[in-house]
Length: 574
Ligand code: FES
Image (cartoon, rainbow, N blue to C red; front, side, top):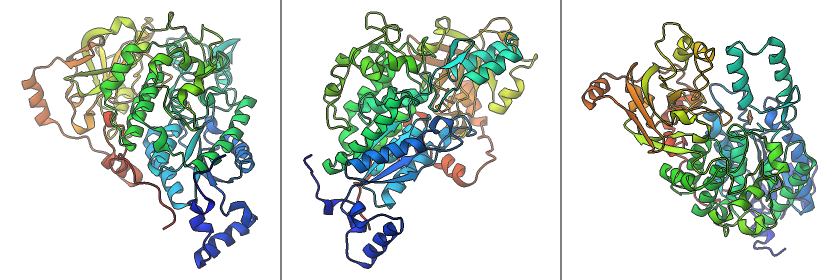
């Protein structure tokens, strides 16, 4: 392998090489760990940044997988060190793991900056772990490669496949309607999560790992391999070997994250019918690279990219099926003409070279261009008087009856208010009403929780109603579905127009024309604006206080304003 770097030029050498007091100290502590000098001096020191945690079942196998990465690093002549990173466990963190994505990004960046590290293998999978790790690696800009944890096996209930999240929402709606027995409820609970790995629908985790591959940050085919498959172990070893070569070649995130790579990522996001959360994460990652991704770019790309992945919640199958059907490489091979194939990837090859030989094995799961799940437009960006800085809707998961809809608002001032009143008999509403949730945005939530799929009131569920128009400044789980307008910006907590909506106001949603309007005269809105006051926040301490003060709006990626810019090149020890 041709090397662009000499051993003495390694960043870690400035810790371990010098015959100084500090060099003595640094070497002696590695000897204390039982290593020989030749193990680590002049060798690429590889951080395995691991979001394993016993309370994060999606990443439960990553401790074991780190050992496979280490084998690969040793085999290639590197020196592996495993570094635990903050694990944003999606299921358990309240109010939302999104509140801590930026904390993981800071954790990653600062660990890589402060320690004698030459390159990093980033190990994640559960929703926010992928963007958090990538954002930190972008800012530090040391050679880095992403190892996706892989989706879990498909769920099983009475012989039927069950999908993470998506089937939970469906089962819950059916249970609220009185259609699911206690026994069936318990039996589904037993069968929905059968192995380590992240949610196996096309939720945020599967979307973000696919995006990491489309950006060029993983080995080819990495994002589709199920966590429990032995191919995943081999992938981990290959990833360990690859990062050592990347260090010698000095192949850094800044060589991979280009405007064209982001276009590829958005294109793939649309073709897989990806989670709306991807928009926020992609904007945040791009801004850290100094690249602007305006929301209309997502809409522009969405309009000419067909949805080809027939995966729940938009389609029928699950990620395990997607893998057997050929995986992401097969899907990308179907849209080669829409991709920029000359983008560089972590293995030094172009995206086009990595797609050579890829083919679809099952065209029910990965549809042909002539038979897409949707011709175009998996996601739409809306603007209008209710969302001057934009809002997002996953059209592929919305009932077509509501694509053009005008209805009276039923307003909840926050999530607790919604929980308390949604099933109240006093609430004046029917299926044509528009449910509005305020104060669930980046600052208001805080953290923009996934509250955007407001529940359908039980009395409507019992009448067979399963979708309504819902509008909020919150996000929605990638596994969820429905006519849910999300990410309304500016958010209500900072006085955006969403804060001014009152019960009975007419709201117009027009997806074909990308419009979202509050049909209230401007004079009345000006009066309400003058009367508006910011809701009191009860939890103003520590990290949450910092978050509320410095987080940007949804259309800006919800990053911290002091991190949301391109970083300086990584230096050695100082
Ligand atoms: Fe971890 Fe869904 S809960 S990916």
